[in-house]
Image 1 (cartoon, rainbow, N blue to C red):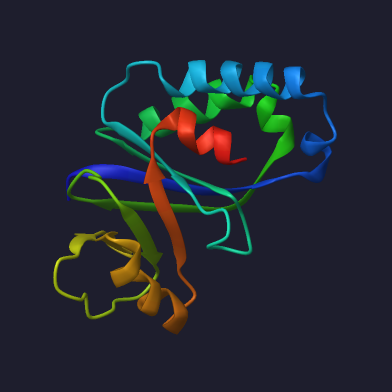
Image 2 (image 1 turned 120 degrees about the vertical axis):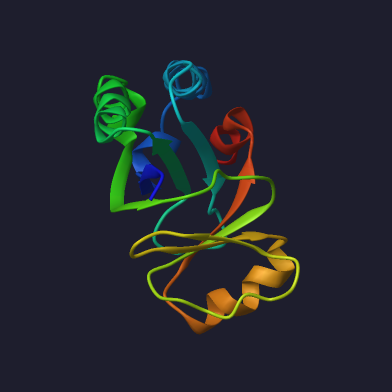
Length: 159
């Protein structure tokens, strides 16, 4: 299998919303600076606001070596924003493919993908990528995480 994957679902703590808007923006910028640094592999952010009751942010990281996953986690741990983001669930796997555009449905079991949906198979995870309209019915059937792929800044603005 190709890349090592880490998908982390974060929940925003209510204390963040009580901060002054200027401080919120500063914390987001610091976090964004770390996320935007060039690195091997890929990093894709998904907003799960309104789509997943367990969290608001899903980060999908792919790296050619497991150490790449550790490096990003270490860098994020040094940001003050991570003090307001609680990692609810971390999914680790190894698979092929890189994310594209649109929505993402993360499942721990397989499902029959509808037409027009791209499939990423890992050893344990089954990722479906495509329009939310196609993924939503499958999300209702399982315990998956549904998110909308946006730019890093856009995802942070959703928080």
